[in-house]
Amino acid sequence: MVQVHTIEISPPLINASCAWASDLAQLRELYDCPYTGAVTTRTATLNGFGEDDSNTVVFAASSTSSLNSYGYSPHPLASYLSWVHTLLTTPTASGSTPSKPIIISITAASSTVLGEMLDEIQELRVRLKQIHHSNGAAGVIDPSTLVAVELNTSCPNIKGTSPPAYNFPLLLPLLDVLASTFRSDSSLTIGLKLPPYLYSTRFQEVVRDLSMYSRGVPGSEGQDTANPFAFITSTNTLGSSLFFADQTTLPSSATSSDNAPYALPTQLGGLGGEALHPLALGNVFSFAKLLGAHSDPAMRRVVIFGVGGVTSSEAVRRMYGAGAKIVGCATMLGLMGVKVFRYLTDDASD
Image 1: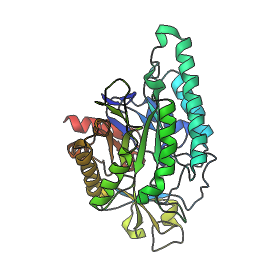
Image 2: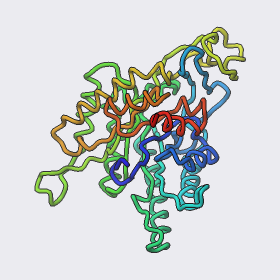
Image 3: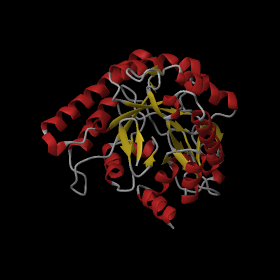
């Protein structure tokens, strides 16, 4: 079990925010899987994101790698709030009371819209808390009503914009809103989904800027601090990547269209899976090293979710060895469905 601020994740294996966590049926399957310790939704915007046939995924023939041209979810935040409410208030497939956290992945281009989204998530958490309280002692679950928030700062496939986390100071207005929400309700667990960085000063910049949000804990006489950001997810896919059609293996609308010789209708997309794995490990390692040596106790408590090329038990172990406390996968989920989590768990126990 891994404690991530007010939520508990056990086992420490999750899905990353991705297209295979888009709707209620997919989320229900992930939630009912006994091998996931938490479920992450696909990234939602306030009103939904336009999606068409150009948004798709292809898989490599020579490795367990993927290239996708997906943007954010076509479903609005309101749909995810309704689905999360359903998942957390109805018995699981085994008949048990829901006790698995759900991480709601969101994004916004402005601080005003982000504030509105956070208000709606907080309203959901209030409703869930009221339901638990009305159930009395038998319904004691709180932590902290099983909802966390992940701000996706790093999708590489949005036309006309670059992932804001590549220019971290531009992200600060959004971080200010998250910090303000946390200071109004410190039971909210908040994280950031980050892009793959390529050189050391980027890691230093991220850690430095996040540490600015730490505040002293009342009553600790300056010995402890609290930071709004409980976790970072590292990494998202690597943008501006290209597959030719003859590099892919699985049938898809992308390879059957007239975009030959390229695999995706958009030509370029986000690279995931095995091809990303060494870079993802390096990102996890770099953040773990900086956070572990930080003088601020709150920064030392930041949990790293390692994502990128988790295709086997060896990859899971490498992520832990690099410094991740939670491990997530997406490409393998797309290839195998939820049985991948049993595969990774069984393989890891061999």
